[in-house]
Image (cartoon, rainbow, N blue to C red; front, side, top):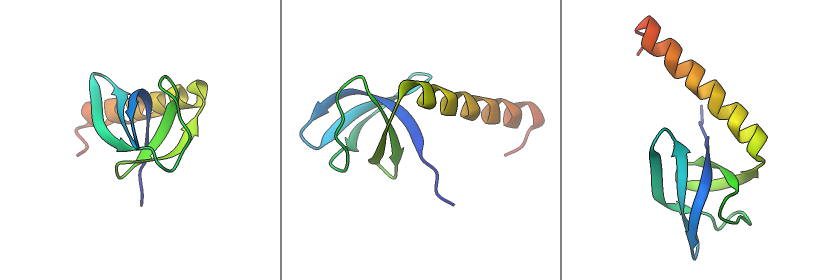
Length: 79
C-alpha cells in the first residue's frame, strides 16, 4: 500500500519546495518537478515527490481524516 499526504507549499527553489504538512511539521526538499505549483497551493506528496496539486478544500478534508485516524489510534492504543 502506498500513502500520500497533503501539504501546503511554503516556498519553491528550482525543482524543490518547502512544504507544510500541518501540526508544526514542515519539510524542505520536496521535489515538485512533476507538477506545476505555486507557493500557497496544496500538493499530494508521496516518497518526497509532489504527485498532484490539490484544491484547499480537498486537502483540508484529507488532513481531517488523518487527524481522526491518529486520534483513534492514540485512544485505542493501536500501534
